[in-house]
Image (cartoon, rainbow, N blue to C red):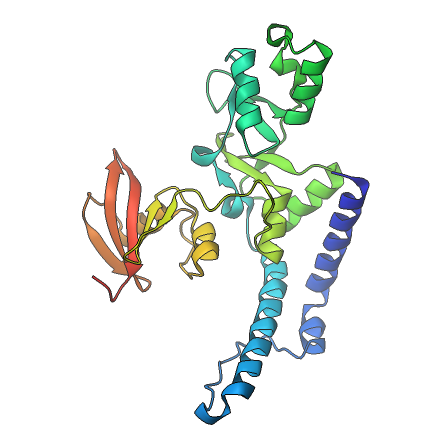
Length: 296
């Protein structure tokens, strides 16, 4: 990241800290209280004014959502926003160098974990820029590349780390990529600086971003979702409000609500949605169809 980028990130962190310290005064200065604001029903004969009011209310709501997200950083943990290991792109250090280079260049990410033997044995993190520089130094001779020597040392963080602490740690280390492990040291996934910033400002789109993987909108209005899709990503992408306190993925939510691992074609209704299990892989819900509860 450039010096300007780090300065911007540091300024953002300072704003977050000040907002957390003076949250009550901040809301008061903005004309808000900490009590929920009930929507006001518009009058039919004042459509133009109501349209303006709606836009203003929408802007105010967006502002409140961002302020609320600042405070959430102390409540949320990295496990709430991380990319789960089942969705994490990684590279096998034992693959031929040519294959490793191809995987890195085809990935939309600039950094990828490097593992040996199993995904639980991460030996480094490969940066595309470092790999290309090393290739250039050996005249693009893949056989002379040792990816383990190019990779940087992996940084592991506990899955219970709060987003506020992780943001501070990213800024201190001038890093924006960490691997997440559980209390037993087992790999859980990865978290980036961008993941945390997106919790505050919403989705940050760039030329390499793609739609949420594993989510497909059907012509009949239903949504087909892979079981591993995080609930927070689904809520953000579809403007839903499914709870994510007891489960991280959509499959986990269904298992939590039903207190069982459902069979294929079983259907359940909760939180205003109708969930149908389309595919089960051993003890894992692989695919679900979700539609509004009142429909078919």
